[in-house]
Amino acid sequence: MDQGNASARISLRQSADPRLVLADRVRQLYSQMPTAIISTFVVSALAAYELREGRYIEILWFWGGLVVMLTLMRTILYLGYRRSADKVAEAAQWLRWLGISALAAGATWGFAAAVFFPSHADQQQVFIAFLLAVLVGGGIAIYAVSWPIYALYAAGILFPFNYVLATFGNRLFAEIAFIVPVFYVINVGIAYRLNRVFNSGYRLRHAYNKLTEDYSALNDRLEHQLEDLLQAQREVEASGRKLALFAERAPISVLELDARGTVLETNPATEILFGYPGPELIGRGAIEMLCPPGGPALNADIWASFVASAGPMTLPQVLCVRRDGIEVICEFTLIPLVNEDRELLSVIAQVRDITQAIEIDKMKKEFTSTLSHELRTPLTSIIGSLQLINSGVLGDIEKDVLELTLIAERNGQRLLDLINDILDIEKIEWGKLSLFFEDVVLQDLVDEALVLNRSFAERFKVRLEAGARTDGVVVDVDRKRLLQVLTNLVSNAAKFSPEGGVVEIDVSIREGRTRVAVGDRGPGIPEQFRSRIFSRFAQADSALTRQKGGTGLGLAICKRLVEAMNGQIGFEDRDGGGTFFFFELPLKSTNA
Image (cartoon, rainbow, N blue to C red):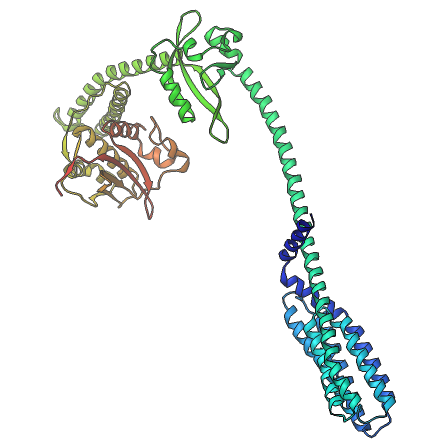
């Protein structure tokens, strides 16, 4: 037990900051300076009074002047320390100055002993010897915090006095001269021991202060953590109540499942959707009970993959069977609840009946497709007739009538383009669009797109230029559909470029894929529009967009066509303003 306490004390002392310990020692020394200055001055005055009679009155006056000057210097040193702004950082320097001051004080008394001891009577010699012994002994109380300073102070007093005793010629004094160094060593040893005690005390005090601060900080942190835990507990309880209320009143089915797919909890909407009472579902396997055997959308293999990944999963169309045998198509959203070790605790399954939504969407697409086909045939005839009239084949017509027929032809063509775009995107989404893949030299196709769209760009006073070229690159694509993608991107860039602007098409190779980028110097893509730029009928809401026109289907068609050809499409801001629209395709070969 004692060894443990000793080890703890040693550890505490070692943990104290040496700078703070030194600063405490210096503070202690300077706190005793007023006592030392006053007592030294008083003793000096008594000594001067006692020694006023003798042959060396002039030297006495000189010594008195030294005492006064030293007293003033030590007072200035003390006041300077008191006014010091950073006593910790300057502690070593203040200690050195104090050592010089102590040595000067001791030397002053050593000078007095060397001069006045031989020149006075026996009684006065005894007085001087006694006085010096008192000063040496009293210095321990003043300077014991730093034994080197005490050693300097005592040496300044005793060494000159000891020299006088040894050379005085008196046998008794010579014997005393041998004792004085022993007296000096004993006093320095006492000061050294006291110095260690003081240092140990200072280190322990600072170590305990630091330990107290650490404990206080630790208690504060623990208190804050307890408050945070209580607050977190309240929030968890509130969240639990909200979640339970949400699940109970949610209009969609919510089930809680374990890792095996067993139903743990359900809400009322689940009973309405599947026709099973809640108690009948709880404890049974959701997949076996709700999904028909062999269903591709949600089966044991898909569930095992979901549990292994422990990540959210959405199944857009899952065939389910109600209790009455009616099949419904549902959208499943599976949200895993995991702990810090990524162990699955339970699964929240949100199930939404989308049977009617699918039927409505199917009817809408069929209606749109039918309507588009029915509109395209008469519209093509109308545009053909207007083109015959405008070309002058049927004879000259008046200027006012010609302007009206030209407007009718342009708007008819825009309507036909819209119908064609609708038909294209419907074919793509229904999987009825046939692609004819062939080997195509990409740079040749880019050059062809530049030629075909140059007249269109001139309508907007924009130039088309080929930027970076990569000749000889071969890709396996549908030539007609890739040219349609290039035409859409180039026409968009031309429409939104300022007058006099340049649209560039760069072809490059990146990590085994070829990249085609169409760059413009237009106003850029608004931040709020970026997330839906490739959606159907997506157009930025701006005056420029309304002025330039468009169906809002071009980029949606481009995205679906590029992805159908195993590519990717995107956009990025261009240095200096404008936008790069690009697509990347697998590189089949290159002859460059």
